[in-house]
Length: 510
Image (cartoon, rainbow, N blue to C red; front, side):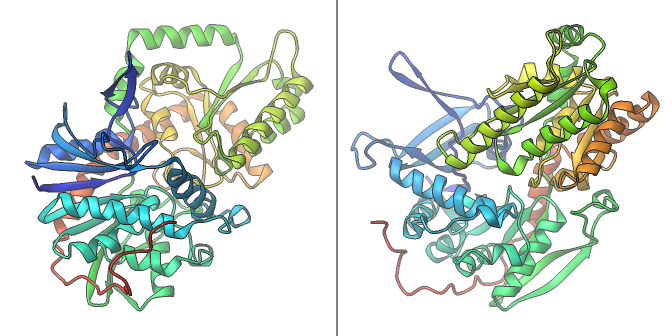
């Protein structure tokens, strides 16, 4: 049966759990993951489909189920699962996406390495996603593609199904032309994105960067722009833009460029933060601290997150302010998402060595300045730490949005607490009442955290009230409404571009 809405995302829309030798499909545990929100769109159509990949020992095994039918709280929909071998996953995700694309997207040209990239394999995987989406889509259907792993899907899909509407949402930063154009496949990627009817980004800066890249590589006209809403202009911060492009024309085809910052489920987090068990756990955490203040840092083990820079700032603070020793604790949660990758192992090792050195230098029998947590913390427990913390210290060197900052704010119905936030996180253009800092500046980092620790209660509450208004207004439901508005406004009235193609399909991976 053809689907009116096809969502194309690298992850499956459920968790697979082995129970007594059987595989059960369960709802994703994270309340703020993008997956539940995407699935909610299926309630607006009679028939929906999801396209994802699944690791398979033998992709050609006859007992592999390529399509499964799902019925859950979000309705009935099908999931097309593309069987990928371990080698294909490694080349497609760990090598091409993480070693070549990831550092460029975040501006780390020194970490970029395209020598081991198997580009034919990346093309092949993207082609298979496009084929599956084309097979599922009804005439005139909307196909919604997500994130940089699937950059080539729109171009391939346009060749296969010129009748469908194609939307793409970019969940990471999009860099400036002088960074993006380091990629040798830059034109192929951009030509594919320009085959979309709509391309969406978190903040105006990323949209502006995309347009600059497109115009540097192709004959693309900017045919409309608009002033940035005042709520997304954070004066003096690194990612602020005044004008945002809204429409392009490429080879006669018009492309809408939209901005919709992803939010969190503020209502759900607020309710968890008010729950008696959460309050009891937060009280227990505070009791364990005594009179000490708690700094909380939560993120992935990734060189983009600035974990080492943060620990070094904490060390400088303890060195410069002996009076804070014994009166301050840092809980640094850094969970690895890619344990088998050398770059992330190096970051984890550096974090452990730095935290150990600082604890050894300043710690006593009664006080350990840093608690380094390298495991995933259950969300209910994390909310209790959000409630108990005096300061949330969120200072990535680069980040598309950063939902941890928004989670902390949503978890403070008490109206207290201070958010110290990097100006290089996309969220900084929205969360203007945070203590904004530059993680590349020792002075800025140290002064921001000291100011946060010493902030009077009245100022803390004024700032938190402003932050909560933004997080509640721009929650995950607002993102969904903004996306729907953008897609409703783009009907694909102009013909799609003629994409350069010298063969009926991309070269097969060897």
